[in-house]
Image 1 (tube, rainbow, N blue to C red):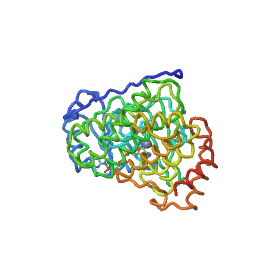
Image 2: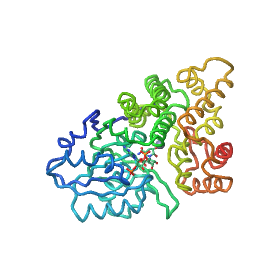
Image 3: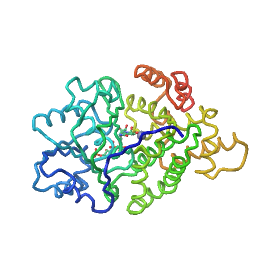
Image 4: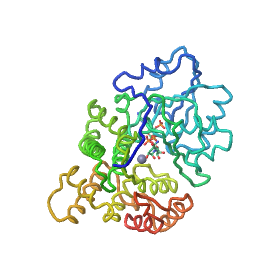
Amino acid sequence: MKNFNFHNPTRILFGKGSIAELKDQVPADAKVLILYGGGSAERTGVLDQVREALAGRAILEFGGIEPNPRYATTLKAVEMIRENAVTFLLAVGGGSVIDATKFIAAAVKYDGDAWDILTSRGSVITQAVPFGSVLTLPATGSEMNSGGVITNPEKEAKLPFSSLYCYPVFSVLDPEVTYTLPSRQIANGVVDAFVHTIEQYLTYPVAARVQDGFAEALLRTLIELGPKALETPEDYDIRANLMWTATMALNGLIGAGVPQDWATHMIGHEITALNDTDHARTLAVVLPSLIDDQREAKREKLLQYASNVWNIREGSDDERIDAVIEATRGFFEQMGIKTRLGDYDVDADGINHIVSALKEHGMTALGEHNAIGPDEARRILEAAL
Ligand code: NZQ
Ligand code: ZN
């Protein structure tokens, strides 16, 4: 196992009715800005629950944060916070709203050009306005991690950042608020959490038994419950398990002390920057092709994944690896997510664009061995057409 330094300061308030607990978590004397997305939180009544929990407090609201949150929108919130001397932020939404809130929290306290936060991947951040979240879409793990991703169409860029200062102080996870999610978003969430787990697991063995065991349990849970969540949308236990799985998939725990491979995400981000494809759908296209391409480097873990997650034990090594790649693709398709670039209108020209963008953004040594450069990315994308 590799050395690690693990600390996660985010308090989780989990379960039915837990939004009411906001009254004890948001500092009583804070001037609060509630941030939300395009209107789902208003329609579903989640915002009303939040307003009720914080009745009598000094509150402002900022709505309209887009999926794949836009840089220009975050700057408007920064201005509002500075003008109104806001002291605490509360994100109400999915990964996009929480990511945007993290960026805004850091940008308010940053004296230079906020764009530096993204070009430095967050390393220029030295402080942030404290913030909490009410999660409405289990997927990204943003509710319990320190990262975010911001999109700037003017620069054709979708860039990640992270900072120790960007952990939520708390996150409220009430599985009942996920009942209103359209199946498209449930499927996206399951696939995103699945790929997060895979990218911290499917590398090479380092005798990290606990991390591997946790990762395998998360993967099996997603495979078993993902399709059921589509069939029975109001099953509390299914939604509760999916919500906690997505959080655990990217809160640092399974990634501590193991090699990581974020190549699928970095290539996927460029597809979203190109044509706004949903984040999880880009991952479902790239991952099967990437693990096929990298099957030698990942051989031992692929065989472990086949056996422990999919119970594939028959056949030669290569046959089991072929079978597990097909099983993975089949799972994404079963969730209603297409796995070919052509399904998202990306052709050979699009691949040229994605490979140039990877170079431009310095994403030229991806994967657990830094071995996925522009040529490998092109090969992976061509095989995914
Ligand atoms: O905007 P509103 O109207 O709120 O609607 C949203 C949005 O249209 C809707 N929604 C959310 N909760 C709902 C709901 N609709 C009905 N009922 C509810 N309870 O769902 C749509 C998608 O929301 P979004 O927040 O965009 O989805 P997600 O949580 O998948 O977040 C995606 C973003 O997170 C980034 C992605 O790149 C993308 O920008 N990621 C963040 C990560 C992190 N911080 O660690 C890691 C991930 O890999 C990912 O890159
Ligand atoms: Zn993701």
